[in-house]
Length: 422
Image (cartoon, rainbow, N blue to C red):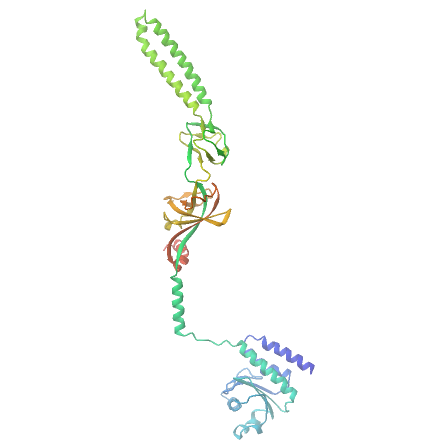
């Protein structure tokens, strides 16, 4: 009995692990022989359609055997439980063919819409009936678990699904783009080179606080000092010649004619000296206001030739800031002045700052990271909350309201058109 239970558990595991209904039918009519010996096994529907036969790969529904089995299963369709059968239990019309198609003893096992029939020469004992009844219940569960009924989708459901999908596709959303951004001076005072020359030294460090009148940088004075010395010597010579001619003009009419020329020359040399002295006084540039010095590495400026008016640095109020963002060329088309901008600082990502776009650069420029982008400036809406100068983050710029389907497909369509040229 223990061996029979082990075989039953093994067959039950194989039935429940089957992936197709045809596999379950094959195991039910062929492998049950390991539990209870029999000569024939049949799985059929209650309307007489043959599903599987033991030892056969095809179902002979149109043969006399198949037709007789169909009549037998239709006759037994109302049987509620497992039932042993012989020819004596059937009507005369069915009993006539029993000896031709089945052994003397049979066991009928209903499965709901289907049924199993096992037949052999010896009667089925109560243990045999118990094992096969349990097996029939497993076969029924396995057949139902692997069945995949196709549920027809009504036109109303399709229409409803289409309407819902269209509604979602047309759902209005706001276009937005993300761009790197930082806090820059809103009203900086640009400090430019006062003269043409070479930067000798920078007296402040980047982002250092400075006071009004504090020295920022100084140009090299070597050229101007040399030129001033030469001009002063020439002035002394011109003045000496003028005094000599002024003294001699009392006795010499020719010297009297030279006095105006020598006087003009002396005044010219004096003006040249004053010019060089004023230029020498301007080689030292001082802060025009209090704030912080905004510029790059000082070593980049030391020894660098500059021309008059060239920007060297800027002095700005560290609290008077606005937002500068860099929008990619592919996304700048719908960014407009007045658009809402939200700045998420790297130092405070949970405290976004609100701003309004004030200007969008017409021409894109190459940034230090080799990307090409348009400069966007935005004014902070909260005058009391100003990020510190130089803080960086990410800006989200909002655009127009568009359908969701356009927001989803805009970039793929743009990329596709660029690739295909259509």
